[in-house]
Image 1 (cartoon, one colour):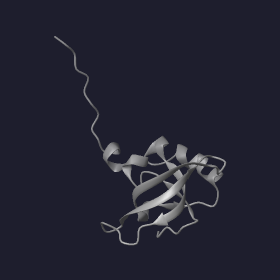
Image 2 (cartoon, rainbow, N blue to C red; image 1 turned 180 degrees about the vertical axis):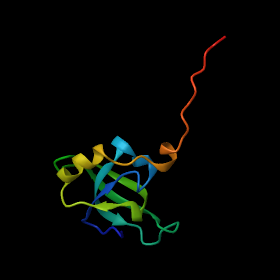
Image 3 (tube, rainbow, N blue to C red; image 1 turned 135 degrees about the vertical axis):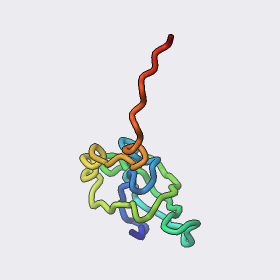
Amino acid sequence: MDPKPGEVVLLDARASVQFAGTRALVVRVIKVEERPPYDRWGWMTGYVLDDVGTATDRRELYVQFEGLTRVTSPLQTVARRQRVPESPAKRNRPARKATTGS
């Protein structure tokens, strides 16, 4: 997806691992850098929206544009934040063995 100013997007683990799980954000895009530094990654500026659509913070974000999800309403994302898939690295990690002191 190529984000455009004015669009509302969901940033979750698909956009960057920093937004995995409960750290997902809903953002109203206000600016997108014209030249991405890496293929499919780029900088954008936007307002973080709360669950009712009020802007709470302005952020500059480095994300994978293909991982962005366009939303029509911030309320639509409340359920999505609760069922965001884990990042593949976390999902494939072997379980830790318990250690006992001797």
